[in-house]
Image (cartoon, rainbow, N blue to C red; front, side, top):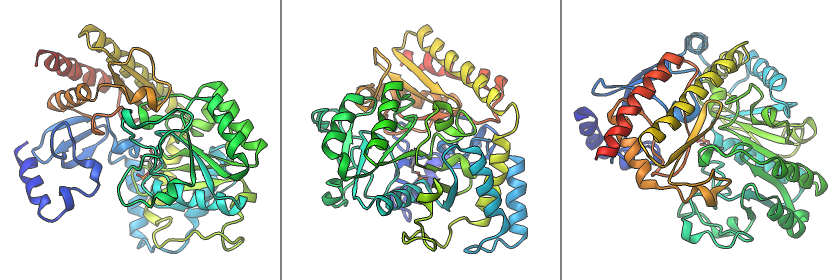
Length: 437
Ligand SMILES: Cc1ncc(COP(=O)(O)O)c(C=O)c1O
């Protein structure tokens, strides 16, 4: 990794911390990896070392790096001059396709990132209901704007009582007054949700949640939790927002809402929707979305909203997700990879378990039972995770490191069953080396 380390030193002279996103420094290595290129399910670093990619741009490149159809669509948009900040015919084409594909969508708007999508969705929910408070689940992640970066990454000893979890700020610099607008409830606890609605139901504009809690690895909502969520929001006139920035297209074309059979009032889509290009979406029922200007009074605008290259990429990507056989392949690779990795941990006597759904999964070290929420997941052994990730990278499998926390990893559709076998062979050697250390 000579060139990588050399480049890190150089980058630190002009980029704060040597990176463009704080989370790109890999704690397991002590520096980021700088990738020279990617092709399908593989990436190469500056030293020319090849890795099977089990991060896949945090889920954005669900089709794989440099996917042919996406690349052609982007090239065609560039050929047209890519005039941005204007509409072209592809914006409505993509909107139609999304409304056909994702159950809750009757109208959509495009933005640039998942963070912007949740920001605008929450503003719209406040405009529509005339209320200010938001209920958010402990540990669920909704991006980097100040309103939602509370109760994420809370240290295990600062969680507070489960009836009133701490509004732990995920960063300095956030005004505490915004935290006061949040009601925090542990995930998968219908009893506590019910209690929170009894107290706050009348003042809530929205409940925002991850319909599959991938930001703690992969935790599925229980049926009674989902039932309570849909019933209570309806009873109290509160909008239900599924943040599908990560879960969209992951296990079904219509995302987690299709998979779970629960239709929210609004949802956000991000990452995979742009096929590796910066596009995100928020949308929902016509009556709610009509509150946006110019039909309504709620503002959502932006110079780069719906950039023509990203819209063209998204059209190609969403068409690919809708092709017959796409999810059969995803589920077949998922089964091979997750069962195989669980088998390797058992074989090497490592106390770890893999939980996955569709193309993303989590690994939990040292937990006896499957985690149900953040309070369970936070007890996983971070040091073991860091050792595992370092060993995997040294053996040619790239995992992103989230400070050792239980978080999401994943593969892309370009990964074949033979590639998955190759990943398992490399991980077998990596886990062996980790155990011998
Ligand atoms: C569920 C969820 N919402 C929002 C975001 C923020 O998206 P972005 O990083 O594109 O701003 C993320 C990012 O990981 C996410 O997982």
